[in-house]
Length: 475
Image 1 (cartoon, one colour):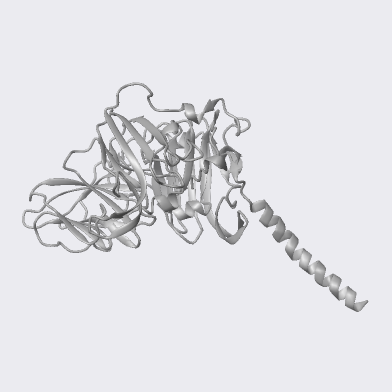
Image 2: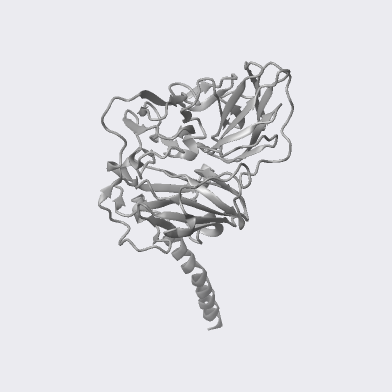
């Protein structure tokens, strides 16, 4: 009897451990084929409930750019899986657009109708083009499984949108993006720029950091005394300390929005993953400017290397001078919390340490619900142990405060915000672009590990699905 009693106790202990683990494992499984509208639970931010969030009168597929009219800028981009050579000579096995990476620079004037045809020649998992930072109509946003199906090998997809906002932007695949962007499926786009502006895309291929696909130091001929605008794009997954040395410079735009009354500085600029910054300076008469980005640099002018960036950094919370916002955060219609954390458990049946949003692991995350015309305030806090560059599609938000300290400089408009560990930001935006929009970490492996959710408008739904026969993987 003692023997059987011991066995029964051991069995009971085993079941007490295994049954909860089995439950947690089973409830963590993500369906192989699901709608983004079925994710998680509705969060109305203290505003009025809008009924069942899974149904809408308007489809994402109908929220397109202009379907008629001749395009002012028409580009065809052919996506390939292939080996290619960087501008500095190193061979990379990755992805290209029209045979190169970065892909072609697209330039448009403000007000132009842009038409881009993506042709997938050989990217096995499919591909899309997301217009990072451009607040396009929802159907043009390029998110597989949410705003379109991934373009399969042999297929094509046409994007059309008005180039309404001047600025520096980039485009990249939003299908298996942690792999396809890393391996080269991206390019830059400038709206309303001058022909002699310098565009500098920072990207790391196989551990080799580059500017415009070139490792090491490179030099560009720019006449002494010339004012130059350098448009810096961070396409990597981590923050980059960048900036100009050799003379004082101004931060004239961030994430495609002009800074109000910028002042000269020599400090470094902390550029978040996915973010952009425009720097302006005059090439000194007896010297040169240098754009620095860690192990790579771009020297502008004929003079000697002007040296490295200082330890000081530009703080956009106080940089520039105030100006009207165009919205009143004090009269917000909805107030959301976006708390980033980390916890042990299962994600899709895999044990590990996973990112959480408001204490929930993917896919049981909040769906932030808004109505068109709402003013929205969102508090983004991070206690996860790592920094996260948070990117909201389809909108620009203004930073109101950081760690309780109110912004006092130029309106700091962002579409990608570096939220450090133990930091809290309060941001505000106008819900003026109907659709279903991703809101995720732009350290793209973090997004693939569950740090993503959506902002959804009343009355909008999507016909597209993640997984299934379309193999959509938006990450």
